[in-house]
Every structure is written in structure tokens, then in C-alpha cells.
Image 1 (cartoon, chains in turn green, orange):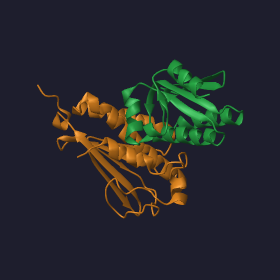
Image 2 (cartoon, chains in turn blue, green):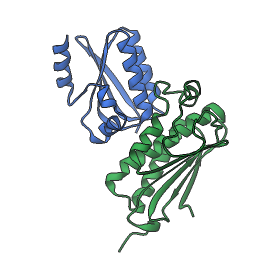
Image 3 (spheres, each protein chain N blue to C red):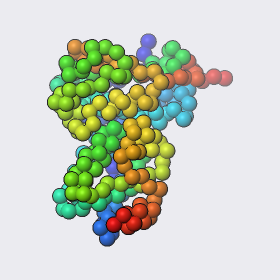
Image 4 (cartoon, rainbow over the protein chains, first blue to last red):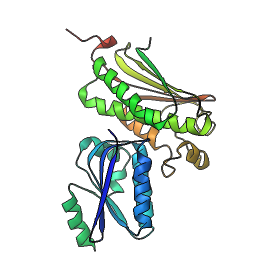
Length: 116
Length: 155
């Protein structure tokens, strides 16, 4: 399955909906989108991965790269993910300590609102 | 004797094909359903690493993947042909991470932030992993328990 990307900005939070497989072939598209969003002043990103079927280290690298970029602007990059197969790769690499990971977009928005 | 051998051009688009083939053969070999995601991810990581290395050093050379089921385990070997003098360890296991920042940036062009992450993921997924860097390429061999040796379903 190919990668589908969509995004919307609500208040100060930009939600990036990702669907499909994030691998060495498709990850550059996600990276380009994250860079574009940051370049346009969107520094608080929430990547919704609930419809992601596959994620490899290339995808992790893109997310970490995005995190570095938003942090340079005192921003944030957090994730929505409840799928065990995806969460496992974050645990193996220790990245659960790096990313805020939420069970739903609403839960993440609520936490983001509290932090403002 | 390898059950299936596959060679593919060093193009990112082919990594998905390699993942799908490996997963299909793992299933047929009797690898537990719960492990198939691990097989898919580990094979993808090994092939992605090889593709990135070839794109830097030898884009015209194919990458080889061998899938065997004749040892009571499902064994996958991914072999690349890229010179790897950037690998610190001359031989060894999954601990032989790529550690030279400049070289790693070349080999892991798409994830310069986290060189060596792919091999770290493989090491975390497969209980049996061997990374063998050589002067003419890297061989990554990994295996998982198979319930049906030689791919013959038990009756």
C-alpha cells in the first residue's frame, strides 16, 4: 500500500494524518511534508499514525528529524498511535521516551491545550 | 539449499517486494503468525540498509536475498556488494554498528539523524542475527523458528 498524507491546522496544532506504509521508498514524502510545514511556521505537529500499516527505521529517522526541526523553534512533534506492531519499534529503539505518544487526536489536543 | 533466491536492483521501491516475498515464505514455512511482523520489519530493514549502501557505492549492482527453510528455522540472508570500510567491526554480530558519522551519512542518506538504527532494530527483532561486514559487502543473516521444516505442512 502506498502512503497517503493529509494535514489540517486547528488552533496552533497541525495534525498530520498518515495512512499506509512508511519505508525507505515512501518516507521522503513524509519528510518533505514535515519540512514544508515547519518552513511555513507550523511548529506544533501531531502525527496521527492510526492508519499506518508499516513503519521502519527510515520512518523513525524522518520523525526524529521533524522533532529536531520543530524543537529548534520551541515547537513539538507528538504522535497518535495505539497499534502494538507500530509501538513495538518505538520501544525497541527507546524512542517512546523521546516522543509524546497519545491514544487519540482528542487526547493529544487536550494535553497540548493544557501545556499552552 | 536455498528455497528462494531473489536479486533486485538497488531501488527503494523494491524493498517492499522483498518484504512481501519474505513474509509469504515465512508463513508457508510455518513461522508463527505473531512473528511475521518481525520478519517483515527485519527483512525490510536489512534490504533498506543494502539499498542505501548500493545507492552510494554501486547503484548498478543488484542486492541478493536468500530465504532458506532447511534447518528447522526460517533463515534470511541479505547480501550487498557495497564496500564497507566505514564499518568499524571487521566481523561479528549485530553489535557491529556503523559508527563513523561522515560515512554513515552516506550509507544512511535518508536518515542521517540516526545512523545504524536499522541494524539496531534488526537486533531487537530477531533472536538470531549475524552481521558480517567484509571488504566487498555486508551480509546480514537472521533466522526465526519454523514449525514445518522444508516448508512442508504437517499432516
